[in-house]
Length: 209
Image (cartoon, rainbow, N blue to C red; front, side):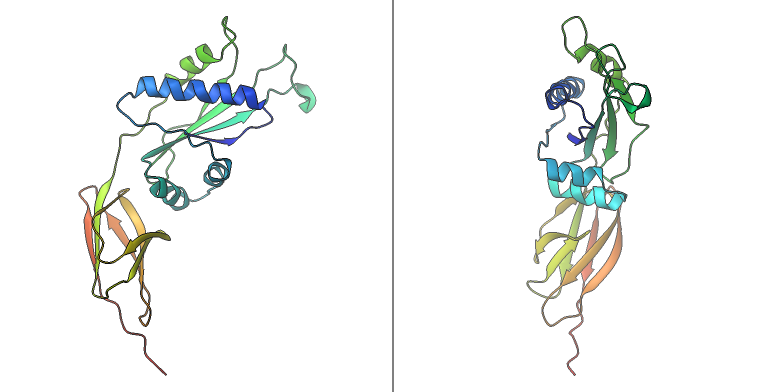
């Protein structure tokens, strides 16, 4: 779970709302490992990814099958002035992405109104009742190559050096690249079903002038 934008909301309020959302999701999905990514640079990078492949690569690197993205927006008075306590409260926009980097369902917008306890918990709990997290979805991939020590990349992310064992990735279309000194680089698109796939690569020696 990450925060993509504070939207001029007070950092203390954003942290409090973030903690509540994380706690509520853990209660809704106790069988799922939910992690909070508090590093701002990676979170902003994910939030600004325009392509599903870009988001999927980000998630693959972190072993995530879903991402819950929060964006905050300060309440605004007429004319764009900052809201006072009597004016509209700040809002939290919640989006969910699956392992393929595709948004799941419509974004949720939750008004951060404080309950009798002074917490956002009641408002967030009511808003998150409609949130649906995708189930874990990974597929095994085996890549072999006839060239020892060839380097393997998936969606521009290094997987390692052959021989490789099984790796688990999101099902769907990916870009596979294999390279080794003295050989022409090999690049292909692969479609990985949920049952998994095996790809055998033969590199072509680079011709010398």
